[in-house]
Length: 150
Length: 188
Image 1 (cartoon, rainbow over the protein chains, first blue to last red):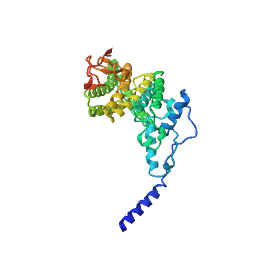
Image 2 (image 1 turned 90 degrees about the vertical axis):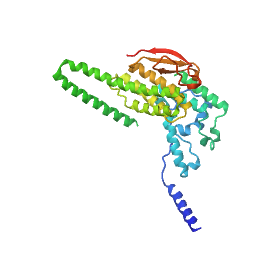
Image 3 (image 1 turned 135 degrees about the vertical axis):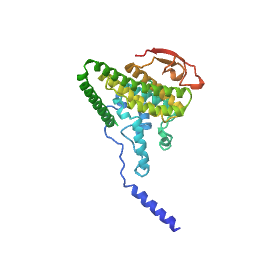
Image 4 (image 1 turned 45 degrees about the horizontal axis):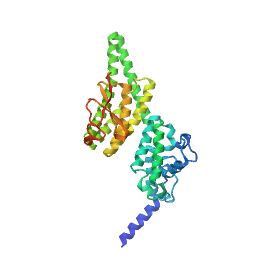
């Protein structure tokens, strides 16, 4: 019993302790000129969908949920965002060459088609981020058109 | 990453200009003959780098033809390294910019190939093939290459091969002979 108590106390102290370790927040007040939405003529419904389903991990501005303030969730999220932005950052879209844009658009379409994006772990909590069949079709058509016009 | 690339480029450039300077010193003694040798040597050097990239690309292609994910992944990693080792200094500024763009894209696809399942590898191989074809348009190749085309995979997809015979990397054993030669790329 004593041992269990000691372990519980250690865990509690550790849990409280890690709350003081700062994380970098992926937030910005300005939308850069290179943003996907600014340089492309994106219909409003698709803008909304991208904002809700993609921009949290694929742009310079994350809409943080409340539980992000609690460690170790914050680290987990920070890691995801870093990785997501390395693959694709909508905020810096226009800094890509045409070759890179075509590449990215092709990957976007493939990922949505295969149902690999948005991630299951994300849509589990953000129900509204999941794509309905209709929404997926709209976004895929839009991205394909954009690619073919480059 | 960019900083690292820049410093690697700077070091390479320095090394090249240093060897150039030494060659020139030698030339002063040996007169004209050296000049010929030197120019031959420098083109041969960049050829070797191009051929290294092509060789990794063809290993990758052959692995996909054989439905071998593991070998394809290995070839992908090797390709990343070969691209990094490519020396662009003998090309014009414009060509260098285009090559840098091609290599940035190709590296990303090769990296994905090194860590994905076979369907994914084939998706990335499609764009990678375009990159490598564009590279050859600038660098040339030592051997004659064949651009081949399969109309069925992803609304039509091309790849490069060293032989005329069709061995389809997008379908492997499922449809080994689907496709045709679309273009012959003569060697330099």
